[in-house]
Length: 358
Ligand code: PMP
Image (cartoon, rainbow, N blue to C red; front, side, top):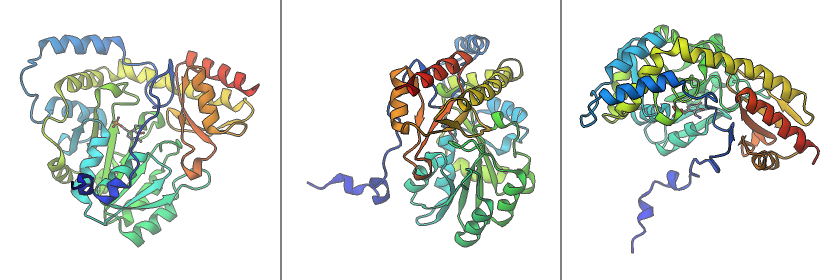
């Protein structure tokens, strides 16, 4: 019998699947979602529109209505926007149209694990520049790596998952100036940092910005993300995106969410930012726990009394799910905690204080 698994590329066979161990607990602080959920007004309006839509028909070939709303929301031309089934899907499309076997993809790590995973599946050679000891992007080292390795794609996550640090405009420009390949800026958490580098795409046509509806926009269940780039680049990347990649239901909810962004969602972002300060102060006051300053809706937190694994287990036993990121050699004593509701923060703090007495 031939071993059909031999048909799988060795780089893929060698990969560990991206997975999440447990995905449910009453207090879920492990996936950086919006803890307040989608406002009822957006849900109700979306359901009304579902009733009016023709369920038996394909959606529009190009989701024009959503792209126009995104264009207004993000201040970028609709010709340069690609909507995806989550932003991960679009990143896949970027790698699909750029990476040929053995070409380099540059990452600033630790960062979102999916970049390495998908680049590897596309047969890229991943070159990694470590964050500095303070978990900042190491711009001089990234610049040198760009010059030395000529990566076809460089991915910068800002705010970075799981460290919460941002890249400055000056630093990003200095990378764009030397890069002959593309620079993908993942702005999945940009609402929590309060700034965006979308306008830099005007001067730097090698910049691509990706974003998601899964975090601030409270739509993780519906899988919507988008990419912005120069229109000519978007035309090429679209060739790797399957037709009808986002279903009409998700399009409708995403459109409705954007229509009500200012009235319904921006206030939730403001509440998350208030809560971020509060959780940071409270965690700082607990012995053995040290939160790292963050520009996102989560905080990388050092645990000195218990191992991250043990802390994860103790919190899980108290109905709280956090992310153990200690598998990364630079994050051996860290967990990542999402910003929850005030009640969830209270429960977290109470749980941590009770574990401390163990
Ligand atoms: N980018 C980053 C940096 C993320 O942390 C995540 C989710 N954890 C995503 C993208 C995924 O976004 P989506 O749900 O749109 O695929």
